[in-house]
Amino acid sequence: MWPESEQTQEILLHVQRGDDDDAINRLLERHREAVRRLVQMRLDRRIQRRVDVEDVVQEVMIEANRRLDVYLQNPIMAFHLWIRQIAKDRIIDAHRRHRGSAKRRVDKEQAMVAPAGVDRSTMELAGQLCDPEMTPGTAAAQAEMAQRVEEAIEDLDEQDAEIIRMRHYEQLTNQEIAQALELTEPAASMRYLRAVRRLRTTLGSDSSSS
Image (tube, rainbow, N blue to C red; front, side):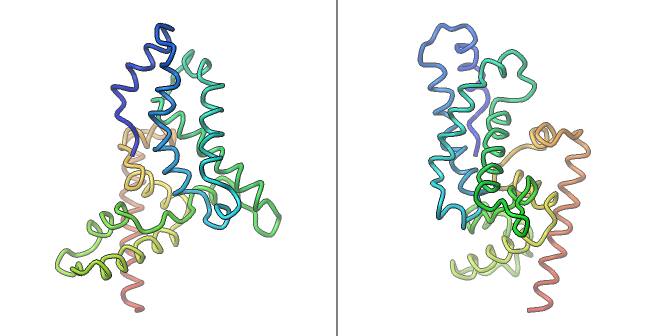
């Protein structure tokens, strides 16, 4: 989902040296589509009826441009993880602005587990979690299975759902997840494995009750 980091580093070097007037624009535009997908995936569908995803994306780009000098002074994480964090903050702000009441409080945890919808990532995850011999062949049946997986993810607690989405929807590596969550790599790996076990259990329970 996120752009390849080696080329991003090359652009960042041009930004730091100041030898390419278009470097900042290329850097941000390079990440625009990934940010858009993240916002579309994580922003509550009800809020998307009132808030244009592209407006949120533009807020992220403006904020990243404003804070870029500070990031370059101390780049403690990869650029895509840094701009991802800005996007997360803007998503949280959107939830608070539009659903910020005592009865329907949406804090950081809730903001990051909005339905992602059934897409290719869900299909691929369903294929990994389900017995290959039981995987249905028709497109309709595959979509139904993927929908079950998505609903099962929503039934997980925030921590489990978040790490599964990071790995399978955002396609972050274990190292990147560890950085983003401020965990050691072994701790991030264990958290992911526990989340997958719980997801399998949830799917198994759904199958038994259906």
